[in-house]
Length: 148
Image (cartoon, rainbow, N blue to C red; front, side, top):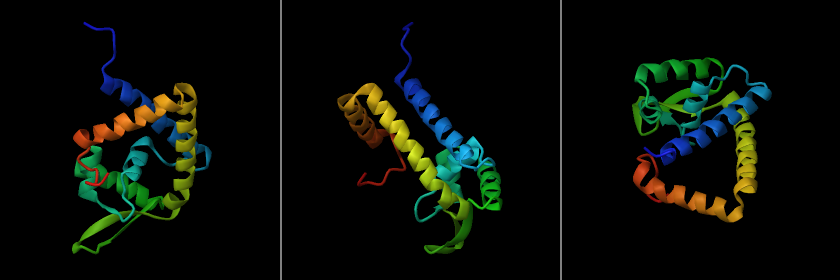
């Protein structure tokens, strides 16, 4: 048995730390009603909106769970449901109101995290980490657009 943690666990630890910091920054900025589960759902919404079934799939939760989370986000003004222009029978979940106001708060914390990680690892190791993780998306990310 090895004493080294699996690389997936190491990536998860770093991700969880970043996620918690972003949610904490949102709460400090006054978005105290946002839960981690809601933030995870909100983070998966694409710029043109995303169908609820796709959000559930990406978050690896039941559609009913995703519905509850989106309902709460909608009541709090973070998202809205709109008609999908590709299929009038379907609805898209889009970031709205408070969600749009929250985006710069989250982006600012993401930038602070990346700056801290770069300072800790150094420019070269951080660049290599980004390159390696970007290359890994080719075999791990079923939601990545083909050109990414």
